[in-house]
Length: 85
Image (cartoon, rainbow, N blue to C red; front, side, top):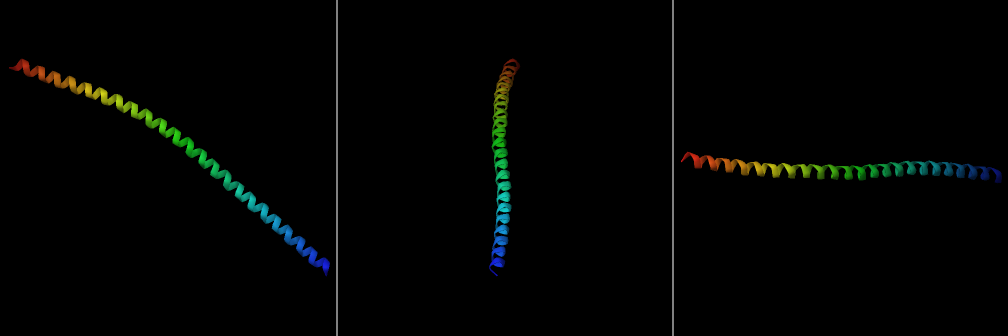
């Protein structure tokens, strides 16, 4: 009977080892996916910040042009009023 108990223990240990390897593989896959997601988010953030900075520069340029045009229009309007009187 001692042998039967030893075989049962060996089978139980084998099952436990197999389950442990499956759990480790699962954890490894999850860790890899989390790292890939983190890398994507870091790259996405950097790209987004760069694009927003570029858009901000373009908006600043457009605002300066608009201010210049407003000054030119108001100056031209004031000059027309001088000629009408």
